[in-house]
Length: 214
Image 1 (cartoon, rainbow, N blue to C red):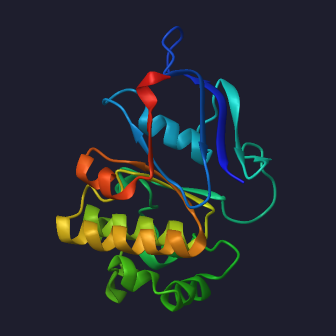
Image 2 (image 1 turned 135 degrees about the vertical axis):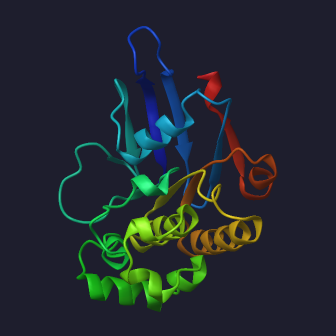
């Protein structure tokens, strides 16, 4: 049981690969930090692990099943919390409906009620009034709270956090991470974390992987 990148090769331009034969394994309950200088491809690797990009070679396997080409309904078993939350929402949808996308087998009202019953709204500090607003009516930090709640509502086996709390103040960062880590422990969920805050990684990560060494 693990999230595995097996022999991944990828690059945006010919002759300049970000990775060549890169492999990584994340076990349930493990918290792996991806480290390396800016530009080495940490965000790109996050998108590959979550299925938003396909590698030129290699594969991603989730608990023994290939991630790419998965068929059938249901949320992705690997959820990515995007670095830029303003890019993660449809500007024509109210935030409550966007949140409900995390529980794709439920109606929007049922999904929102599930999020309430699980304590997700309170855990990440989402106010009820925000549910009826549109993305442009919220700040980046407020949108990031919705990104976190929507991803957790999908009940992923693995959660990828790409600069998840960089747009939040220090107090709110601590609150959100406390909630995410608590839920991760309760669900035995594996985490992949990218952050430019060394102190945060010192507190969160159980293991570090140097992406630049690939």
